[in-house]
Image (cartoon, rainbow, N blue to C red):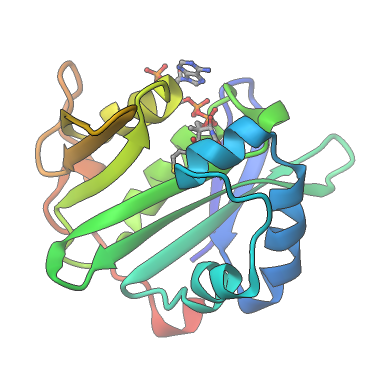
Length: 195
Ligand SMILES: CC(C)(COP(=O)(O)OP(=O)(O)OC[C@H]1O[C@@H](n2cnc3c(N)ncnc32)[C@H](O)[C@@H]1OP(=O)(O)O)[C@@H](O)C(=O)NCCC(=O)NCCS
């Protein structure tokens, strides 16, 4: 399912499903990330995306239990520039819960890319997922802020320098009215042909 979006500065963007043919773009895009961004993404030093990781991150996307979306900004010449990817992956052992991960190119951070991606990702999330359960580094304020927009968040220290974060998608975050992202069921399931 393709969606239109607008970043905070008015930049137009398109959000579409990550496809198998995006494999090389994902590999190359990761090479462009700063060491900090790579570390925050994987909570470890992962200098390059291996074939095994790409199998998981690209070929593992099934549009049902693993949904991944890419945001492409549209520049003044109407050319699309990929700037970020977000995904949710349902936990096999806990089908109402899913992990979430977002990566935005460093030069695009702080412009609302993750916000736009997650808004759409929550609309397209796996059916029946009511909470996000993930771990972030303790210094990752941007990640915590983007998750706080999605629902009521509980945060638990996990070892040195990590936080376990649970986002209850059925309750709106403080100060925010209930909306589509807060409903226990997403409004539509992704169609099989989308990916
Ligand atoms: C975390 C990340 C995805 C956020 O993406 P982004 O496009 O910069 O986020 P947005 O611009 O949509 O902002 C989302 C929220 O984070 C806040 N934020 C953004 N950058 C921030 C920063 N450097 N410090 C503190 N807060 C920040 C924004 O103010 C916003 O919060 P608000 O809605 O309360 O105002 C991006 O920084 C990134 O790719 N980091 C590297 C990988 C990573 O850490 N991924 C997350 C774990 S998987």
